[in-house]
Length: 190
Image 1 (tube, helix red, strand yellow):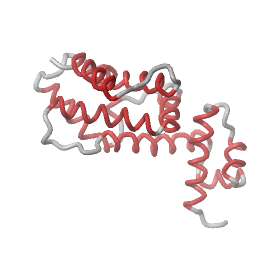
Image 2 (cartoon, rainbow, N blue to C red):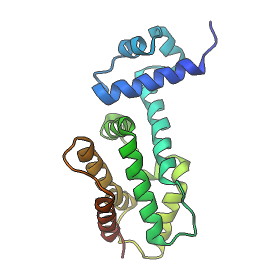
Image 3 (cartoon, one colour):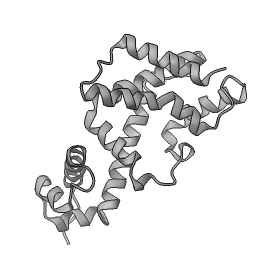
Image 4 (tube, rainbow, N blue to C red):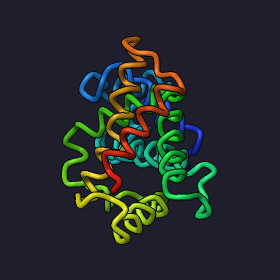
């Protein structure tokens, strides 16, 4: 048995991201991934148990990248609304500048792969964000809603607007982003 190559694994992951972003989960068979990654199909199974394992690994990687982007320049010294603004703008910009990743994450979010996963179970990388929202909730600075609802009201508009922007149906300017994030803040804050 030949040793595994991290380059091959990364090539498989990169090709899978490209193909799923273009063709969806069902339109991306393992044979297509192998062909585009220029590896034998058996090579894929040396790194991933099956297609679901490959997709879940790719999700973990891409979700962590998006989560890390949310925390860019985040510090505890910021005021409550400044933290919200920073997290919101960071996520919006990440999605705007990473459309393949955005499409993949959105497909995953509405697939059976994510069934049963909630905000509380996201990777540790976003603990500062979850802690921030918990602190706001404990100090009654947020409306009396569950964290799922708080996160949905805060961040779902980003997804909708980025999707429309990428489709050419709206132009998401900095001014529009500011207005929208203020509306999101108003919808969750007391």
